[in-house]
Image 1 (tube, rainbow, N blue to C red):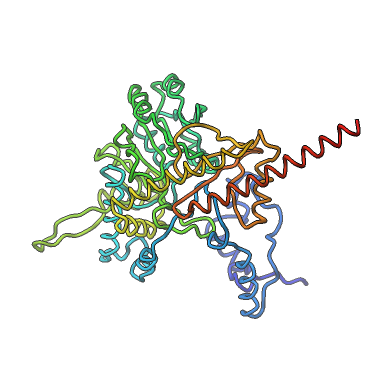
Image 2 (cartoon, rainbow, N blue to C red):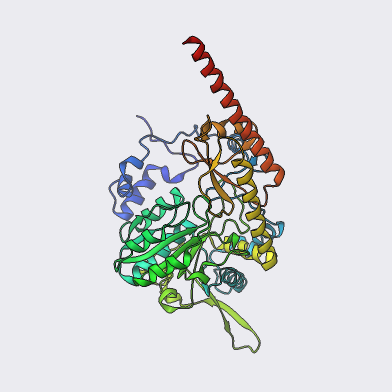
Length: 471
């Protein structure tokens, strides 16, 4: 008789344990747990895993071999972006967040752990100052969730379903947001013009069924939106709100969306002291004005400052805790986890270290290096920018007038130790620069791209001449 397989690392694979777990939840099989996942997304085969290793040292060697296949941006020149960026993380950030009272604390519990509460309060305060908003939440899992939650807030407040998408949105983000809100909101995408919002088209679509206008700045392509005020006016004219998805890294120099009429500002804080880590440490923020209508729709925790019975001493604790899913459990408006709180402390340390002048210097550096990279690449024959909008950190170049595809550029330069960007179409390449990308790095990229284009042109000319002689 064949004995059932029990994985030595996973005790819950034992048949009697699995049976007991299924009985406890009233399920007939493990397949019932996956009923909500479409068949097309399910893996119809076992995971491609090696046989269990008997000796621990063999397992360690195997895992080390897998990890060794990763190549970091310290080893290669990288112009990759698309949501996760190679910004510098000061050493003090890692020093603080690796302290045991922060690293091991779960959401600030136990509740007498006021040091963690204070650290998150300081993060919220610094973010509020950077964004010129009044209220900022403890981080959500990532910026995708923060955006989806912000749109859901707009829908709950208005009782409407319509959302007008006025910007180019990172496809992965749009997919996640759509999955999150598809049961209660309808997303309508309005094509952009020259990289930014088509205000007239957006305003024409806004009706009394519109819950929100959603704009991203910088957009998927790095374009900075210049018509936020007009979009806010279009939203407010029909009783809707303006939700601005953004990256806070540029607001040392850019005008905050709150100063241009935004009602909800949201995004990701990965650029504020969080490492890339082969996919990024990500956390989302939601910022609103000091308006109970908005604050009471926020499902995330908020930490506030309060006086105590001891003269001269203050305490830190939850604000309006009874509005959260932690208090309401299954009856909550929305469930939000707590896994990203540590990244709020990291961002708080980063912002405290940088200060207003540091963030201004960073923003100016990003704008200058982005423009320099645009000029260097677009000067190559056959390479063009896709729009003339102002860009921060990212932009798209088009190779359609050259005899080379974006994928060919990526493959060729990767062999030279350069990650030139993300191919977002057959001929379009999304290029990202940060303060880690110096002028020499940009020049190296431009020279490498020029060589690829020239070699391709030469090959095409040679082929054309051969065909003419044959004819």
